[in-house]
Image (cartoon, one colour):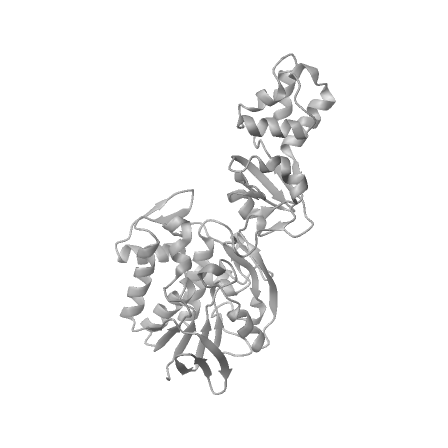
Length: 388
C-alpha cells in the first residue's frame, strides 16, 4: 500500500502527529502492534490523565542536548492542547499547581484524538506486527498485514517503560539501523531500592509517607516520600530518580522548613523523649524506628549542644545510598533514547535522512513528573505533523 506518511506507534505523540498531518491533506497510515489505542494515556494519572503542565518549559526536561526541546515546546503550548479540549467540550481541573487532569477521564482524551484523526482521514492498522523497515526511494515497512510505502516515516514507538502494556525497543533498533547515535536508556520516574540489610529496619515502615526534600547533585525536589518494603517511592523520589546515577547518595531533609536545632535548644529542659517529640510531625512508628537507628531515644534534657546539633543535622540530611531502581516495569518513563543532535529541532526529522522522523518518548527528552511528558508528546508530534 502506498501512502504519504507512515507513523509507527498509536500513542500520544503518534496520534498528535497523525491528526496534524492528516489535516494538512496528507494520506496517513498509523501502524501499532497493540490492540488498543494509547494504553499509556489510558492508565496515566490513575485513569484521569495528567495531560499537561501549564508551566512546561525546557528546564522541566532532561536531555544530553538540553536546548533541543525549546522550539517544539514554544510552537505547541499547553494552552494549545487546552484549546483542543474546549473544542470537544472536555473539562479539566488543576490538581497540584500547574498539573491539569481531565474531568471525564483518560478515555475521553483518547476519543478526542481519535475523532480528530478520523476527521482528517487517518487510517489505523492495529494490531500490526512490524517485520522490517527499509529505505530506498522512500520508506518501506514490511508487516504481518502486508507492505506499506511512503516518502515519510515517523517513529513514535515510545520507550521501554511499562512493558506489560506493550513497550518495546523497536524505535531504538530503527535508529541504530539508520546509524543514529543513542543516549543509553534507563528507567525514569521510578521507585528506588536499597540493599536489604541496611534497609531492614525501615522496611517495617512500608506504606508510611511524609513530606520531605530530596536532593541528588544539584537537583532538589520537595514532595511526599513513601517508605516501601524495598526502598523509597512517592513523588519526590520519582522526580529525583531521573537524575540519580548508581553510586550517588540521596540527601533527604526529613523536616523541611523547620529549624530543628532551634526547637531542640528551646526544649533543653524538657523531660519528653526525643521519639515522642518527633511525633508532632511524624507517625509514632517512624519516630521510634528513626531514633532506634540513631542510637536510641532519651529525654530531651539529656542531650548536650553537640548531640542536639548532630540530631538536627541527621534530620535535615538523612543520607541514603540506593542500590538501584525497580526497573522499567515500575518506571513511568524512559530516560535517554535517540540522540537529538542527529535531528532538526524544528521538524524532528533526521539530518541524514530527511524523510525519517522521531517523536515522543523514543527521543532523549524526558520530562519531570506532572504532565510534562505528555506535553512533549503533543509538541514533538505537532512539529513533525506540520513538516511531513
